[in-house]
Length: 293
Ligand SMILES: C[S@@+](CC[C@H](N)C(=O)[O-])C[C@H]1O[C@@H](n2cnc3c(N)ncnc32)[C@H](O)[C@@H]1O
Image (tube, helix red, strand yellow):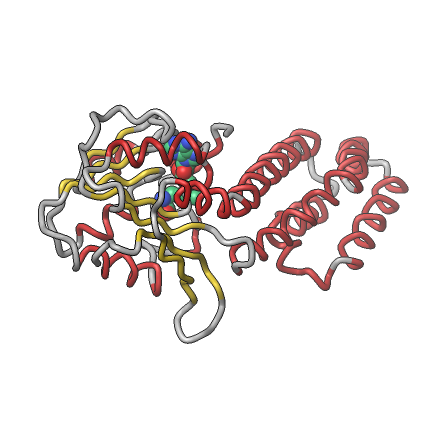
């Protein structure tokens, strides 16, 4: 994993959906964790793996008082370390948990365990639990709307990388040199590329290409550092591709999680989380059948 999660959490987001959820998770995700919180004993010790800036801990602590610890491999934002009712530990890998065996009543994780080395992290989850059945995970599903829409963005990002970056670079240099013929032919090529993909406007918007081209058009003739702006766009595109590749890979890890837990002789309850009032698939949940909540 690169350090892009550290960059992300340092921007101050609480959830992993950027501007998607303004305060904390809403709808069925929120309801799921509130149900969990309402059904476990007060003062239970709860470990949240891949906690980010502690969104899950904040949700379950709202009307309760648990002893929560959140861990993440990335660097957690210092403001949240003080705000969230629990201990948040940065730089902690799920594959090597710094806790004694049987330390926790519950281990929870949302959109995180699937990013880890499943064999090692699940062995650690089982080791730190008092009862190996008391874990609850929400995981990405390869067919969810989250994965499908990000897959569209990933496909277009890869096309931009292979088919458009050279033209954008040429354009940036032509704008500096005010070579009008080259500027016009480059814009024409780029506009054709976007026009041919306007059926996937969601994917295009997700890449930032449209606003970057708009920025170049509006600033033609001005003394702007176009080449530096291009390099920044290129760097952000590379990071986006990396993040989305990790995301789709994480969703594909779901069967590995189920297999590993089956090998541990844990009879699993696997279900779907769907958007409010629709059948749109958001994610899936996993817990041991005997878990009471
Ligand atoms: C999609 S975010 C989920 C954050 C949070 N659970 C939420 O629901 O908003 C995935 C998180 O898992 C963390 N992560 C990835 N691999 C990890 C590992 N091996 N050990 C611990 N954390 C990891 C990332 O740093 C990131 O913060």
